[in-house]
Image 1 (cartoon, rainbow over the protein chains, first blue to last red):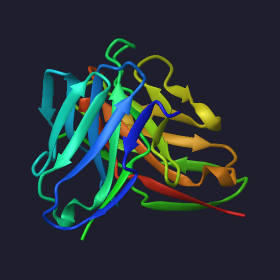
Image 2: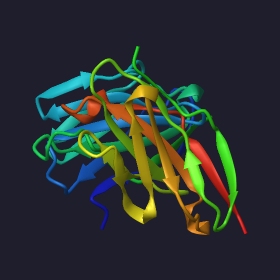
Image 3: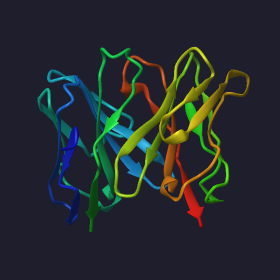
Length: 115
Length: 114
């Protein structure tokens, strides 16, 4: 089983719908992240969390919200999806204690299409 | 401003040929440097990283990268490419202290021809 699991892997929805992407990890890492990947733009940080009580906005948080339900779970919500939120979304984790290099461990991605 | 530039959007090489993917960065402090690979339908996997010591670092799958501070570069190399290396490669720079400070380049897609 993957260490970082994202569900759903693929989702097609309509404009205005609420969407939740879920992430769970078995790595025991304290830090979790949500990134968005668009062609030609690389990965951009949406939100990150250092622990269940510490959630921070990233570079492109507008239109998104997150919830850290437990150390191992971090979900991303789009309250009212719009077409330009069509993208590939990645959850990632990192371990503060392992030399603190910032190495990231990624899930396999959730492809979201908003019609 | 902090940034990472990967000048090549895509590169095509023949199987067995050598490979070099370019990466230039702009970062005010001593950087932590990473190369990640994304195979089709997969998440990103770390190939190698540099944060101190020997400027030539070895990674998985036969890849290596060289940190050149004077050129602000961290180019990825492989002496002989295999068809399974076809993927997208991302250079990233961070400050340590957590992945939230990591900045990714736009990526270079590698095509391998037989």
